[in-house]
Image (cartoon, rainbow over all chains, first blue to last red; front, side, top):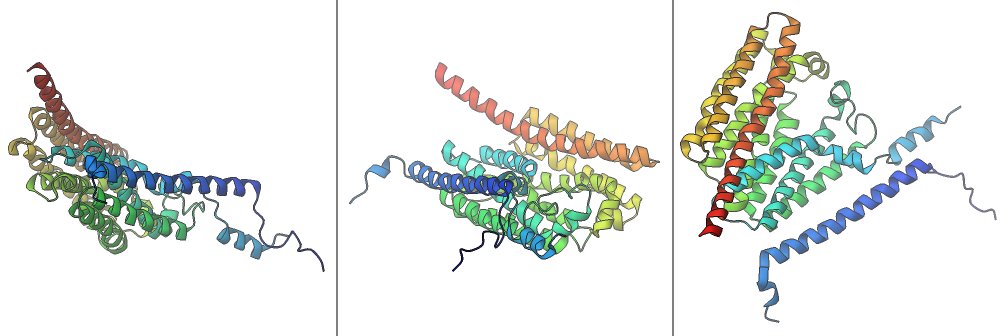
Length: 55
Length: 315
């Protein structure tokens, strides 16, 4: 049995890898920003009432 | 010898986009104008909105406008590629795949409408959705390649942000934001036709029936003048209706007269050089006009606020 050839398929160049990493970071920041945005909207929409919810 | 199949696979399978390419899909310069006009609609509206919620609303409107820009670039990639002004955009230059731009635009459209609706109200959210729909489906897909009235009717999409901003505060629409809508709506044709005269060959190559390409020179120039003339009464209307003060009134009147002056320059240009110069004057001047009238409204509002705070602290 031979090991899979490492020339198979498409191999990313260093530049392509760097761009992919930058895109991934941008998506990560985007998702985190969206979470923060919804948190801020919730807090400012509800105001102090956020603390007085019947359990 | 290069393997053509591998080259094609590489081009279609591997995204070569940088996050900044996605940012330029949002047409940041158009976005800045949208932010500005939406903000003015918001501050003029009666009633209060929490400043943080207001900022989020402006952000959502800006992202919605950007999303429609991305969808426009997705649909128009073929004509962007043959026009000098747009050939370097991310899709025609091959940096972003059309499918990526489509998903990006769709996701941002949905998110921006959702955020605006949840943060403010669903009238504003609905109006933002309508703006995106109007720009992408009615203007880009429907009108742009079919009629010379493309930017006249399509201008409604660019004119809606102050109405969306107003609705974000009040939950409804009134005559005041509709006047602001009319100002941007009537401003659009002279602004774009001045550019279209200069870029006539570009539009002809792309097969976009801009007015200068399908109507006579004289007809185009007369229509530019006509819209500029109409802009004067609508421009000064906020002053007479009481929601624009003296600073605004003077700015809108002087600006309106300048728009007509530049349009007459186009009408009277008797050679190619003079015509181009006159067109650039109107194109650049019209951007200045729109900025000045909305800035005047914003300044008056800020002045009024500062005065009220000062009086309050002195009392």
